[in-house]
Image (cartoon, rainbow, N blue to C red; front, side, top):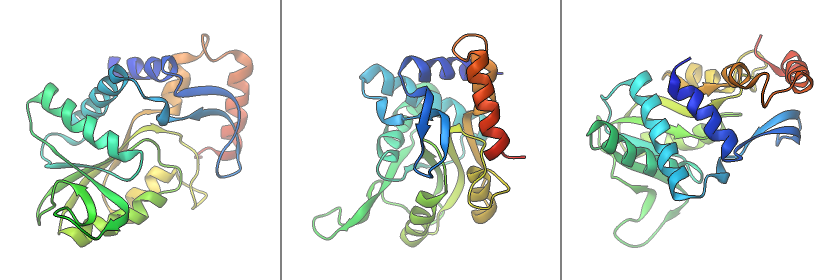
Length: 220
């Protein structure tokens, strides 16, 4: 496992973003772990988070893209901090762009999007915190394509939960890739989290609960 992945896992735990216990997810599933990206609120946390996203994007998708796009709402700060980090780490200017839940009908920036104006041929990387159903991509991908004939280079999320999505056979992040035809990836997977934390944060009892959860909901 790459060093920055181990650092990111520790970072999530230290920032109280990745929690272990007994949680009821929006889907109704009872989960022994929960990730809340909204807990990143301090300046140093946001700076470091952007660096993790930039490193993962650089490693998986390379430098040949123009815009980082973050679906509203949590994706908006993710796109901004990733663009800043990419400039600082790799010296490449990347624009940020996000969508609005409701289109703005006045002013010079009226429309469905905020941030950079998209142009035909722009290459775009999408950033999200976690993909559980693909719903946000279903909502934002048509907005991207309506704005300009852009090419989506890939989707990067922070954590791949590695549990089945709507199809019942593959992870939600893989469902997005299959549906839209662009690669998807995560800074870390839940398997890597377990590997890094087993014996410390993840006790034998917690490991048993995680194993039972994946026996029921995990990608086979």
